[in-house]
View (cartoon, one colour):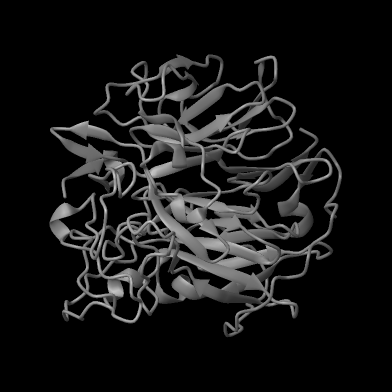
Length: 481
């Protein structure tokens, strides 16, 4: 595969396709060919009882180095180590109908609840607030005065660096990890230990109040459209983590860089993660991997690391990597997420595009946020080039129209969140949190401490709605937007 250095941070970019079955799928009487990797040979049979032979290949070491853009070293705060052996746990209960958290317009959760200054934050369906700090996972339950903490669960116990945390169903969260890309992601054996590096863990809060590893996510879920019977494709009999759902032999999605939970609508509760390779869709403990916008250089398809994943007002999936972006209307069937043909299965409002007003296509745009406001406008935030309104010229156009939003004190942006009052909240690197209201007026949000915004999460299920703002000074929750 062709690789390029990703700026100064040393991450690499891999030649890939929008989805791993980018061409029309041929009839498949016996064997299916991976259409992104045609030289890899036929896919294994669907019969789960006949796994491929073990070629005895020595796995490459995925390493435990820190992920790109890891940022400031998190402060784990205080708390006790849960220290419980994983036992599967439970779902933590049905959760309250109305959130139980303080109703003030602005509450500093670091001061009031001792959550410290974590690197990532999440909320599950029961309004449990999840925290990630290095090898420690914490949860602040409604009614508690401080979080519960557990250390070295799952991949953290194996020495991999954690990246992000995302809420799930009541009492469940997903924790992402970083592993280096493989020089050759094609693995010859399902027993290759490279499959177990990085990826994603599901963790649970038990009724006894401890945190446990539920499962290292491994259950690929993909419809066999070649056979035409809607059956699921073959899964190896042991844990192989997140790999290409179109061909399990390709261990491509190894570093989880971003995540978003669907907060409402038909797919409420599902999670999308952005990786070093694309965007993977997760429902419960099942996943389908993957999709990614691309561009072409000398006939080779390229995609960057995906740090920006969002959910549009109508439930569309917004995804932007370091080069390009796309918008997909997801099929209700998880098993069709990676399906590109026919296009009606997952209609694309934007296939693969860039903004020529920002940079020529070969140059990185470093997208870090992608949101749609209540008035239907799309916004992209770059870590180097500021805030841009994006207008769609046509679905298949390789470029769309970009208009720079003026008035911010810096072009270094970190996150975006669109809220129900029509606002767009803008996280900056060094200049705090900013708000663009429904009338497009910009102002600094004064009641949020911290200079650098690490993460923004909007939960409209709160009463009133809750905006979680994680900065280098800790966690603040804003209400009523």
